[in-house]
Length: 156
Image (tube, rainbow, N blue to C red; front, side, top):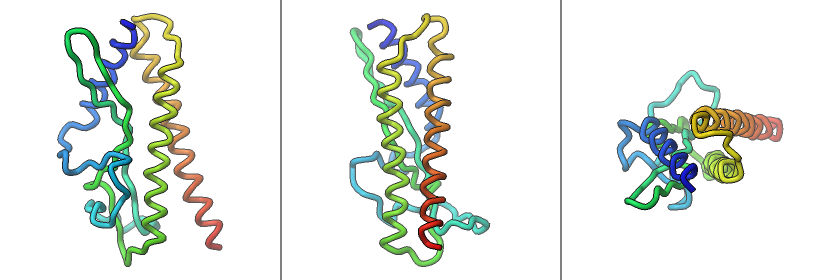
């Protein structure tokens, strides 16, 4: 139990560092509602071959009292870093929603991995969490890229 509390505290520190400077209104947590085109308020990357870009992240907000620390790994959509160019369509919005859904899937998988992981020692906990996160992040990126590649193949 002590290790879990320490681990959640470390996640809290990581999540604060990842989200410094982000306004609460800039974030949409997965499950609050589906994406809308008005959520895509970031600067457009004119050099991108994509018609839209969904920027999302995994984050662990934490709370604690004298007895425990609680943390939940969430999937968050970042409005100010997501954009759309050209004429937005319902089909494109569904595509971007699925990118956000993929983020949620990996948040769940990371939560499961951490819950089932047997940490070697207190001293190595930070390193082990970082390694677990990096492994999950590689799978996350691969799935996002594969999804876009599959859509391109379907359009040909």
